[in-house]
Length: 354
Image (tube, rainbow, N blue to C red; front, side):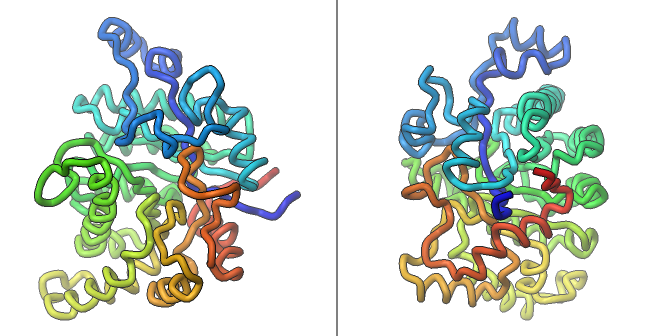
């Protein structure tokens, strides 16, 4: 067997609600989807035909979505990009609809579809449980429904939703995740409840894309200062497609501010940076580090933990040149850790049978 190289973030694409998901929906939602002609609930903020959505050799010849064909994904993620195992993160409209019952029905269908059509056909694949965060009680039900299947190794939520994820109404979701050894994967994306920036709507897609990092920072602060990791000390959170270069200054400022106003949050008993190093992990595509080896080394040293980094390709999204998703200029020791040791520690339910 080739060396273990766990890709922590690939994106199977839902062909459409009325095509891909219809067989997996309950009868009520089948009727609703057909009678209301519901389809095409993609959450991507960038045009589907731009190269970023999938480079030419990752696009099915029939014009369907990049990532929608299992055989092509297997060739791309495993044969071409060199992963030995991969975690599927399905980003589709279930996370954004306002009706919590519809959201729960679509999440159930997505999870059942990925289990039957992808995970059952290739033991190298695992997946995140998609949950309806519009209704935390229904999110807990979906975690419990799928928790017995170890092919599901994490819980997927979006970086931009209705409210900050540290709020107590979400704690039952984190409790269920921790109970079943499921890290929470916070993925770049939005439920489109509010402007992506704190002071309004941008004019350009580029602004929206860059503002994702601000959402991750807000969620990270919320989780730390609301006391989520004190309440659930076994919980891990993975920031997916967050970038990494903002972390050093963010961790320094979080520490400095905590020392000045910690009387307000007495349950935060350690420096925020120490909590972040213990509980937070980040995927390494897209990589926004400096272009030179010395600059990359400085960022890694300032973050202060080689356990935080996870290998990811973001397939079929085109984030890098060539066929090696590992960012350039990383120390070899870090590359070895982020491809195997760190994912296995972060996702304890991973099965590496083949």
